[in-house]
Amino acid sequence: MSRIASDVQLMLRRPPRQQYAALCYRPRKKQGGIEILLLTSRDTGRWVIPKGWPMAGKKSHTVAEREAWEEAGARGKISRDPIGYYSYAKGMEGGLKVACRVQVHALEVKEMTKDFPEKGMRRLEWVSPEEAAARVREPELKVLLHAFAEKTASALTKPKNSVEDR
Image (cartoon, rainbow, N blue to C red; front, top):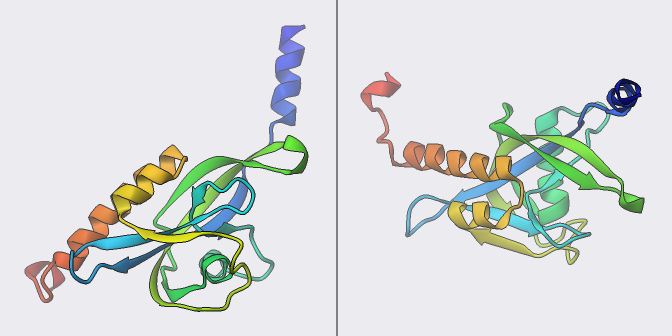
């Protein structure tokens, strides 16, 4: 009987749903390093990065770029290649939780628009990478934030035309 129950559980288990996200960042002028844009989710108010479901005919980085604008008014230069992934359980209507895998693209923010679709629905804050990692709940996203900050900080401080560039 337990074997049948186990088989039924395996049959009902679905692969994670795919989402695409933008890790929005900008260089800090005086202190050096970068800061990360966090926003609150509309439903629970927890701290997140802009993300959304796939869109027909759109590439993953284009979806991430669009979500950054729709949710936060952020515009800039998006990375075509993902910088990493994280998983979380998305709460759906009726209390159902759906496993999601989020592909993350870096977006260097060049402009914050004043008018965007979800304006007033979320709180937005620019914070240090350490503060961003402390605020988000997802363990894999915390690791991704720290790793991205380290990589970006070293790239920002690396002198131009170094031996490595030749």
